[in-house]
Image 1 (cartoon, helix red, strand yellow):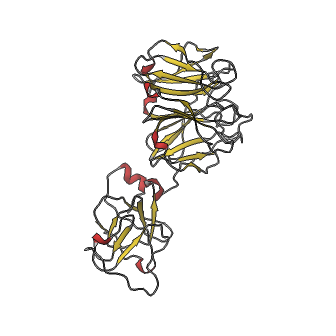
Image 2: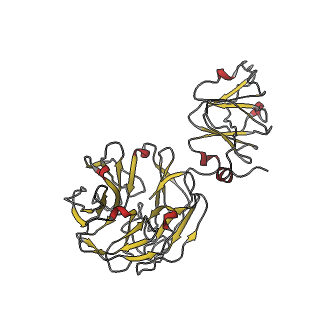
Length: 392
């Protein structure tokens, strides 16, 4: 019995084959070929295990294989995509996959009836993006809602550097066609560009530059603007916080790698960052995650969640005018098991900010905020959050 793709990934590696069928023209005699004749950029197959005789080749997905249906015995993938093969037409049942590993693979199964060519392995079996659904909040959010529908959104980066917008209704839309793997920090929390729409800030790994991507108000992102000419690689953590200074502008926090100091970079009326202010004298390198979570304790000021690396504890640092107050323990431990902490506002629809966390390879954990700074017990959601490269 064949296992689903994800379950096989979680257990043992299997050498698999796949195909995306470009059918030979009707009435045209197929060319005689050998394995070495499969051109770069294609997935090829033969009806025998020696790689001789007629050759099938394609660089696009094929829902049916015509005369090549159930004929594949040897395959090789020389494309930049992953080839997924299926037992039935229309990409149904018994999925197997082949990457460009430079050598042919013999297929034990005699049932290959469709082929899909995809950029990421998860697309062999599901969408490129995970499933995300949220309730409508009773009030308009100041962060976490990039399309203004009062429903919390999520941004997800996949393994090939595409960016996906998940509006909270189970769907997804590509808002970045590639290149997003160039960033080693991506944060969002409110309107930095002062146009009433939530924005994204990224750090470019190769240069240490800081970029502002203004939100379009529909879930997409506009032309980026440089807000940090360099040197941001000196920071171990960056967090978009919301308004800490009390001037109704979104601010940024950053931890200095060499000293463990925490710096406040106030937002300005022009969408840039002002002169930094020291708000933490040291020790902040002990935290391996910082997340601006909004007003978690109900005092009208934005707050910060921080995860302690040595203990896995989760701490609330309440916002004060231009500073952070004495911390309060939120989670006793175990938070190091989470790969990402995502603050995207009120996804539960009760008017209080909540928290999301990814962990256990494929699942999303949802924590409802209590309104007093804490979190209720988490609930696992759908197991579709696998083989991704970050969510925020």
